[in-house]
Amino acid sequence: MDRIKDSIVIRLIEQIGKHYQANISNRFIRPLLLQLQLDKNTWDQIELLTEKADIFSYQGFHLDELYRQIAACARFVEVARSGLIPNIRSKLAAVPSGSDKILREMAASNFVSNLQVFADLLNDLYENLVSLDKQGSTKKPPVYSQMPELSNVSRILTSR
Image 1 (cartoon, one colour):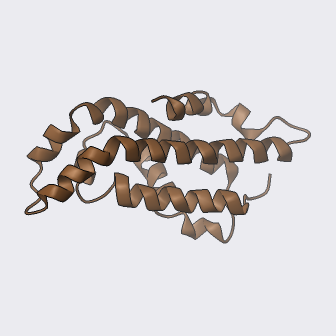
Image 2: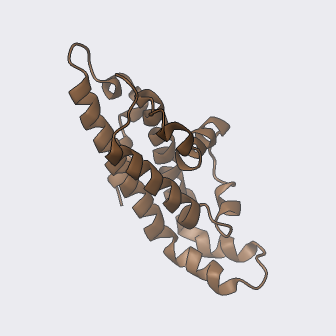
Image 3: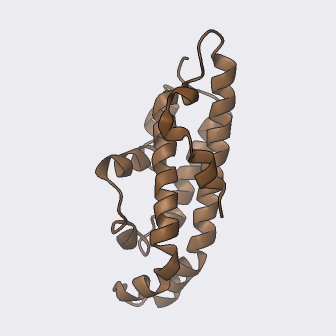
């Protein structure tokens, strides 16, 4: 399959990046995110999707790379749900943030819903890519069906 240049996919990737930077990896939450048990490759894949997507939007995206980035983000969502959400308020209280106590509290209060919005956007992107993948693969199996790391992506992203 050629590079993905679908306008819906590009718009979703832009939305994911903006949402992640503003609501997930903001200055209050970022120090806690760095404590999550994720390997460097996973963080690199998340960064490619959420911060460096504009590099690829003109040339198009490679489908297999987008799938890997989505899988990494799904892993992030899974780890954040189990390792951060249960005690985010107490962890945030321990991080010095100067006079921004109200903003820090707001970030903590909204993290669960912001993480779910992130997961929903990722799932929308994944579903769009699977649809394009199925349409584009006439003689051979779709790419997603050949990538075992994608087997649980929808389940992870849609679980609450």
